[in-house]
Image (tube, rainbow, N blue to C red; front, side, top):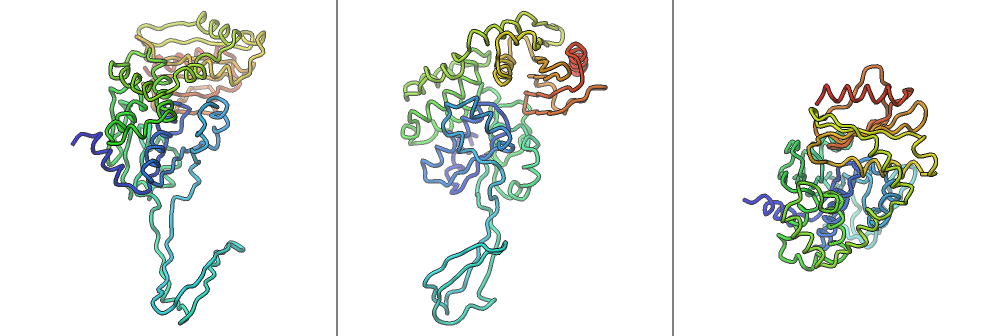
Length: 382
């Protein structure tokens, strides 16, 4: 059976699906998950969407992507993932009214009844999973979900999992694995799911089409990445026909650079170096590069994140940002390193790793020393 068809059939059987997004700042994954939620809710399915660690990065999302209105729909993973059903035998007792209250860490259920009194044998309880399907978006393995995967092992073991990803390193951990390594974006894969539904025209309204096109444009750098296909362009055309607002997308993603930010971008380009044998390129930026422009730290990080994208004949990109005299922030884009980075004599902190993107801080080190140590590590590993 075609994997897309199999995915669709399982999705449509669900009444209460849970969508789990890989913890990331990848707008393509975020928009794909939000569109999936919209699809399911349009069919009166009780969908919920969560992302591990979003409580730590939600403010960054709001600042970076304020034009995505329904980012607030993404919950953190502290939501209820268990349900208890309490049953009462009412064959001899009629219930006229009920209410509940919580006092002193106790749930009190108040019943107004007639007939016989309830006895302990009239009461039963059982635990059930509140979700009948789990859809995981953008994770190469369950390890990408961090502590959430361990804490919710029972849910993940007992519930059908649809694993949606386009990463060649995916471990096929799902019950159904929709892994399309030829697709340049997960948003394009979600479009294919929609296209398989009979009523796709009613689902593809302006907001949904704009979200999908945002994901595709973000991931493909406005259709300029090398893995863009003719099908990608056709899907973009169809989304525009569905009234996706391309002008707003481009304005929010690319046209919000000030002249000062463009000058800093230029300084990164000027310092760019390349190791052809390792297909590795790197650059750096320090406080002397940015102090004349009075640019906030979050905007510097935005420039760096926009810079480290897959390039022709380059597999790995490294950018070093000297935030102050003894703290160096390192940003890496590489598919070749999957384990946490450990470098001898380097004090590494704030490690964040998701798929091909890695960032971390090196404390108590000057930029030249940190850069040399990291590049040596990369050249040995790749």
